[in-house]
Length: 287
Image 1 (tube, one colour):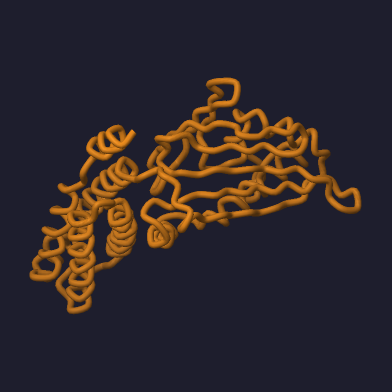
Image 2 (cartoon, rainbow, N blue to C red):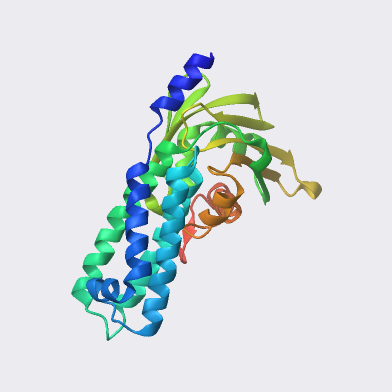
């Protein structure tokens, strides 16, 4: 068993190239911010040099962290969060009359490519082991004016979930209790994993968890309970996950996507609309 664990650790991809890339980029920002500003076409103003120097220090910290850490996933996700900030800055620079738009557009395209590489490497390096110390639990409820058996029947067919879960692209049932999921990850990067149903009580609850190898170690349960006063069914969705890299990464993730709490609540809202009216209203139009 110990030999198997050591073999798995040895096979994990090492992101040393990104570590050295961060250090090189960081040195450029710290030592020559004016030159870097002119290269990407954002002008050589004092404020711009200060911002690029700060970005340089951030890159240096990420590079050193990636190269020196035994578990660099947290530092890699920090790079992803930094990429999102840099893309926002470059997008804002495109609107500036002082910017050389051709150079800024080229820099933005290059930055998008680096971001995709960072996300891919982060997912590949992320450990999927349970980390109870930093595990996050999200629970949200909504009342739906439909009987529990109808809601349960619709939800237990996992192929229906992409109809109201915005980030889930497809769910394919692969066995009696197993399924393969494909979804949009950070910055729209596709992620895939296999899941297994761990508890199934008709008209009451469905529980599942991700199988080993998933990019994010997580589990979930949806409960269907009769709402007070004959108002239908109270549906509660609870998700528990261990953020790659711990609590720091969980905080950084909010810089590149909507908060998980908001995503869960919006999915439940769409489920309610779909079950009560047969359609989902998006921006005032039915989807």
